[in-house]
Image (tube, rainbow, N blue to C red; front, side, top):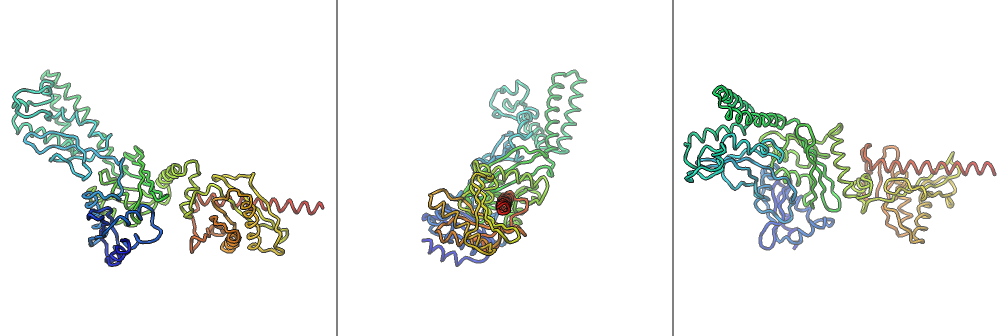
Length: 531
């Protein structure tokens, strides 16, 4: 069946659109979007797919697609279809925050309800929605106070007798037919103005304050006290609205690390200039860009800030910004900061992700594994260097790092035996062969990574030695001039950022091997002079 699907995929247009893998019953099991449908669908039939993606392709019996005019339109359609079908293999953020809304119902005598959207993004009751609001939002905290201030009913209209809330002074008597619909709706409109915030709320507060003064002058002290308490509650709401309304201070920071076929996400929510919450997610990414999969799913519930900071920009940044801006009702920017506090916050999130994935391993080692595509965390690194003074007495040195720290008890020194003249390549080949032939004969544990000081030539010499021993230990070299990493896994050398903790570990190991070799060389020279 995958071969038949592959033939179908080859016939897809080179256009943006949405595609769906379906099972035997025609039910979508995965829905995705693409800038180029043919290219994206073709990627599902490569030999090195993650296990979950391979499983999905094997279960699929058919592929369908819909061509769109743009990538942004594809994103909108994808989200609509995912909400409709909830495919098995699309990511589900189980602990995603569900935002609360205040709903004024569409009834003859409306009620005020706290509601949440269901999985389909809908609210069961019909009416006018205000929000979304987070769990700690002022709107939610004073909802019961608002209901009492504006005497919004919780009872059934015209039930024949007055409810308890009426006797407590929190209901106008809708239940007993003591108020007209027109009088009641005036209170509802005031409530809607308060929920809209800004100047409307200020006007309502001014009106209530004037009414409080009139009640006080008329010696209606209980009424004046109730109004004073209501004004205080609403004033605190106004202050919170001002703080939460500062869009420039509401920002999200999102860090994503892919490891072992899974995407690990941590997110800081900054509200009013203060980090209020950290969220964690883990899912098996199916698309080409896990970040592009995560962002629409996470913000489906609402609560979209004006700025979202990420470590690297998603492939479909423009389409995502357009989609989120439309959903928010205002502009949204996705930004990858290059320096400053915002970058440090993202680096902190990344460090926490790496700590959780790696357990006791240094986060820099996990980053090194990610950067070089190593099969496991390089907990044990052995680094080789060849040194000489003025072309004489060539020696080799090996240092061992365990969990990113020097393990000096396993440092080793080598006198070069088989090389007469100065030949770094032959010397590297000799000391690597001697080290691992011995470990192999002893049945000792091999390192997770071998690091050679030098460029492509030195690396090839080390790989030649390992090949003769039939060993397949990951091996790389680090050239000092441009800090380029050579690896048989890459056609071109890799350059990590100068600030990268992963690069710093490699530099530390290389420099330590060089110092250890020079110290050994000087020791030999002293012995020779004494003799």
